[in-house]
Structures are given as structure tokens and as C-alpha cells.
Image (tube, rainbow, N blue to C red; front, side, top):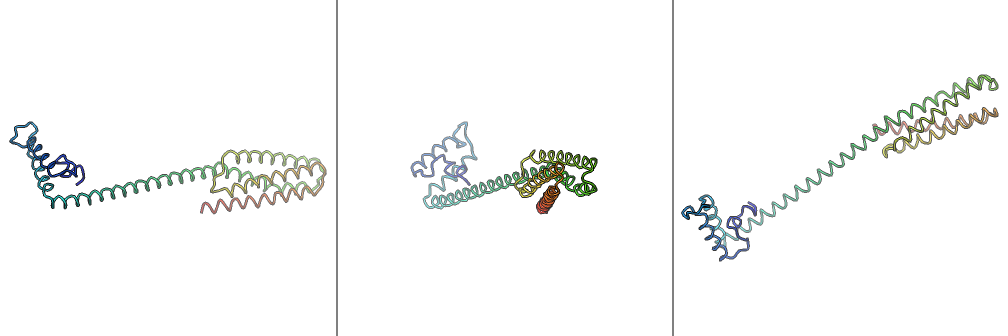
Length: 236
């Protein structure tokens, strides 16, 4: 029972109608819908409802009880509506949060596949080849052919580094993997410094540049490992 199906609605009166207004409304409706009225709007079923409504609201005690029940039902309806609205809002918030989470996960997965894996692979290609190159050159640093091979190695590493830096800058770093991205950034930077040191060695044969470059590569290797550790922790 709601305001749209209450006795007041049936009698087409306000819930605050006086007894006189109730009687006037009842008589008007009876004349309009009574089967014996010869009216085109005659409706026996509606008359039954009108009589039932009038019996309640025309009796002060019954009307008071009815109003109390009507108020209780309206309050319940409002409470149910508020609860439903809260449920709808909560569901919408949850849906938005899940959507945001999925988008964040998609961006992270995209960065992992298209940035991290490529950069990490390139880093390994550069870092793991250094020891062999240093050993080859150590046989005779003053041998022109060995030095040329080492210089070609440095040029190849520089190209790989530039490509890795371009890939790294191609997409924004996901917040969830910010630490891994930071390790990669500094790793790339240390490799660049190391290549610069090795290049200085090819110009003056000063072993200090070899030691400095090797140390830069060692730090870069450690940063690469730390980046992998962050990625593994996130995946788990």
C-alpha cells in the first residue's frame, strides 16, 4: 500500500481532508461510478473500492489506525528505497574500482611486455658480453685488430643502449612498478657511463678507465637484479 493505492487516492482527496470533504468526495464518486447511475463511467468494482475506503476514513478511530499504518509503510518504503540507493551506489563504486583496477593491471601488463622484457633482454645482452670482451683485449691491448674489435663492441653496445632507452621512454611507468622502473633507469645510465669510460681507454690506454667502466657495469648488473626482484615480488 502506497500513496498511489491508498484510500485517500481512491477517494481522490488529500490525507488531510476534513470529514465534510470526505463525504463530499464520496457522494461525488458514487454518483459518477455507481452501476445504477446510468453513467458511462459506471464501474461496480471501483464502487466496491470507494465504499471500502469511505468506511475506513469516515470513522475517526479507523482512520487514525489507518493513517498510522500508512505512515509506517511510507517510512518502510523510504527506508527500502534509501537502502536500494545505497546498494546501487556501492555497486557502482565497486564497478568503477574494478574497472580502474583492470585498466591499471592492463597498463602494467602492457608495460611489462613491451618495455621491461625488451629492456631487460637488451641489458643482459650488453652486460654479459663484457667479461669476454675484456679478456680478448687483455691478450694485447696494443694490438690494433684486438682494439678495433673492442671498439666495434663498444659501438654495438651503444646502439643497443640507445634502443633500450628509446623503448624505456616509449611508455609511462606504471605506479605499481615504479621501483623497478627506477632501477632500470639508473641501470641504463650506469651502462652509458661505463661505455664512456671504456671509450676513454681506447684513446689513451689508461687501465683506470677499464676499472671504472667495469665498476659501472657491475653496478648496472646489480640494478638489473634489483629490478627483477621488484617485478617478481609484484607478480607473486
